[in-house]
Image (cartoon, rainbow, N blue to C red):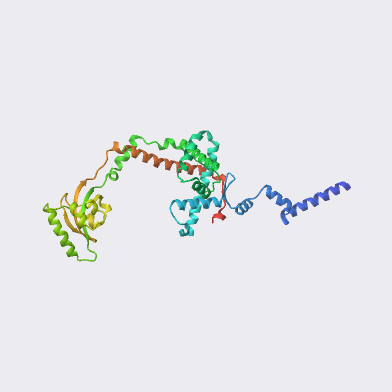
Length: 353
């Protein structure tokens, strides 16, 4: 029979006790060793709990995005569109919060991409100074600038400058990636002009003057009779709308200008007024009635529908197409960038939901 030494028995006993303790620590009591290991190697649940406790709603390459940042971006969006947060429904606020977080995540990924490829995005101190000076000119005083910075969570002028520099670097980097796709050739611009010639054709315009007397509170026949007498005098060449406007017309907007209403588009006028104005012959005043009262109307000039020649519109068309392509290319690049880095993004829905 194998005889074990006393020292071996002691070692085996100690090892058994140690193993038993470890088993109990890990599986029964959640003891200090298990707690230490969880701190060193946190589980997904640990990371989520820690993030929620600290107000973190997402991490991008382990860098946190706080719920406060999301809410500030949400407030900026509402402010830019002139909306009152108190009048936005809970469902829409939730959707806008998710959109704000998506923007912040994409911007965080882009910042990292720019840092890695800074040689393609470096900007000069002059560029930053010019941008900063242009921004500061929007404010009436240094105090107003400081208040605006505080509202955006910017603590100092140095931080403002760094943010300006980062934005310029991002814009330069993006342009280096999309430049080829935003170039518009002369042929493309001409094709767009031909395809949209109907939309580019200006509508017929008419210049009109009138005398007006309202029927509110008085007999329609009486008003008609007054203006009919003036119309006879005008047609006989004894008077004119220009001469009568100041003393006869009740249209305060035009009576001081000889009854002149300026150039008018049919779709910008009340229907009953436009129906007469855009069917009358030139320089032949006539008496008409609208829902407001009676008018003597005269069309003094007519501009027929007109399509400007391509050469006159070329620069504007090319700029518009380039701007449209730039926006589409930037959106597409940002989307692709986000997809390529999705494994480095963690989102903790608890805080946003």
